[in-house]
Image 1 (spheres, one colour):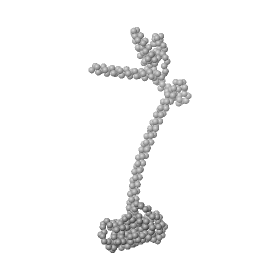
Image 2 (tube, one colour):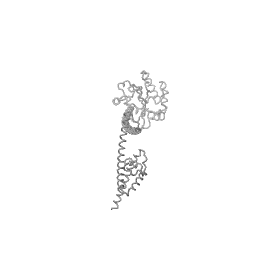
Image 3 (cartoon, one colour):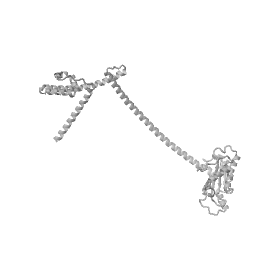
Image 4 (spheres, one colour):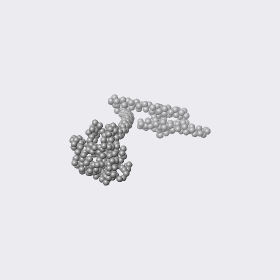
Length: 379
């Protein structure tokens, strides 16, 4: 049920109900004009316009108060049934159903107040529009008398007086559902469809962005995994060479081609390292020999040289051992003074190289500090 106040709105409802030409031109999206001829009246439309019928009815009953601009001049009802209720119903039975609906409204509001009652069969499902002037039994124009706070009672009554007879269920009590005219419904559906399409486009964009991010993440993960595998392979390769060198030093000669190749590579690297150490040793030996020649030329320095050699044997046994094995002829005069050097572990050779480099660095740093001091004092 809908309450109508303005004459213009009443005219629009009349155009729709009675399928006026102006409505069929703009309302084609809601009706099937090929079936409009199947529409029929239970209460014929008045010879005049709806608003004239209403005004005449108000004068006829002698409504005493002046009708306000916001007064409800017409109540319009739409009654039908859901689903395929009318699908296989014979025409005469259908007409009887809608006649019962009109009779119900007439009992509630007076048959004389019914403006028109028309059945529409050119839309989705058959339904009836019943238009009534809300004039009370005491001749007042008052919609509140019929409807305010009474709609639940109306639903119960229409069910008891009409619904039961036609095996219909009562509407849900307390429901907030409201009737929406087809034109408005179609607008809502179109808007909802447009909103759904827009949301779908947004979802597509979001999905595309998510896929792009996922692809980049997968690519970055693959790159990181490849770098990790390369590092592991290089580490394992170094570990293999270390083991191959150890096996070669221990006399475990490899039998397979790959293992032999690893041993050759490891031995080549080790040989290069030993050559570098030998070069350092040769330099050390040359320096010691020069010192010895100086001491030999100066007899007074012989004791100092001997003491130096004792100090070297005591504090730097590795250096002494290197010198002993590389320059035995030079050190022969000192053999009676010193016992042969104690054999040292081979891994000390690498430590000796690092110690020599550290000594050079400290000497250079000390020399730089000395030069800096002279510079400032000179100023």
